[in-house]
Length: 244
Length: 238
Image (cartoon, rainbow over all chains, first blue to last red; front, top):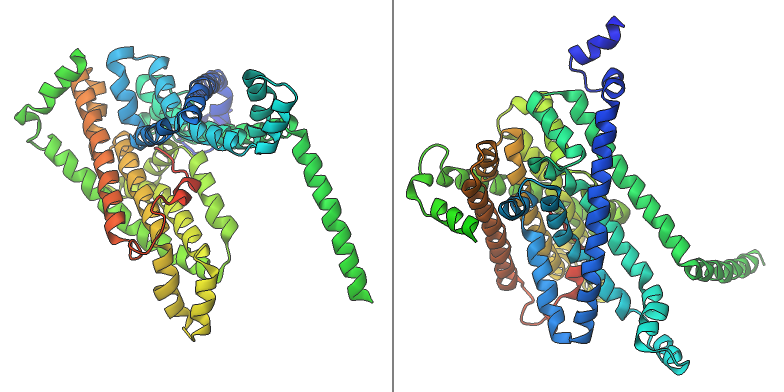
């Protein structure tokens, strides 16, 4: 018991006693971190979708829209959150609104790239089969845009997880709250544990989204398998030739 | 809109600009930190990126370092550095954190730039008997200059943003105005500080975009100034 208490008292970096005694605090912070991230990326998607469609429909909107989202991206997060405080108070909305604005840069760009990558033949075929504009969009174009879109969602999610920490300035930073508190009190175990959890969260989210992308686009894997088979056959022939 | 008006009157009050903790001193600290960190970043990232790009190896490292940079919170690195023995060395924990987050965008962009320099031109130069050093300095670097400049721009904007967070680690810079405003519940100071930080970030970005246009050695010969390749490398706000 004495040794266990000493790692807290000695302010060591790695402290099992800290993780055990503050497990509820760590869980609460992680839960807050996750819901702020999920809310930000989901709202970001909901906002990015009509913007990308608008930019596709009206070409002259695309340039200024991408320019504006890139401009927002240059504003440091601490300033972004601070600018929203007078309107929203010290609330989670401040953090989520800021993170939504950042996520738009990647999401709008990738959604547009995804929709542009849809082959014209696929569109023609769908129209020929009597698909209306809505069914064409949701039944053909969006599914084909999934790889580019998911790449954008992964980038947005990972960077949102990292940036959520700065929300600690208004008390809604998830694990960032613990990092800031630990910095104020020079509490090593708290800063290290919260930081490690934060990076772990980003890695887990990235892997999970990659898995989701595989599930959503089974045809990509089928294509890759077909390619490997062809490539494998080619290799086989070459080896045979080399052998001869 | 009252908040903006309050922030404006705070910003235009001359007494807030002077003094040891005034805007003038904080702005100076911010610019100084940015300049020092940018120089160190360039000294580290450019030689590595140009060399890796020249020999055509280490691509996975150069690309993945940006992904890692994205996943690690700036605040975590600042917090960890603050609590190491380095934390007591004045501005050093801040400068190290700034450099750590500015190296990935510069390294990745410069590497991609050299790597994607037109292979035909590079081969032709080699055929003309250029030494590897001449090849790098006279062909590859000029061809890569738009992406190198993009990398420097991303790194600089990243540094300006990260330097704001240095306030949490007791460092100087404009972030201190914001954190001080929060600590004392003075909203005009918070908003005024945030406006200064945002303005500084945008000015730095604009100046470097302009510099990029003026300094591009091939600007008159490049057919498409739009540079769609810019979009390939996404930077991270801090």
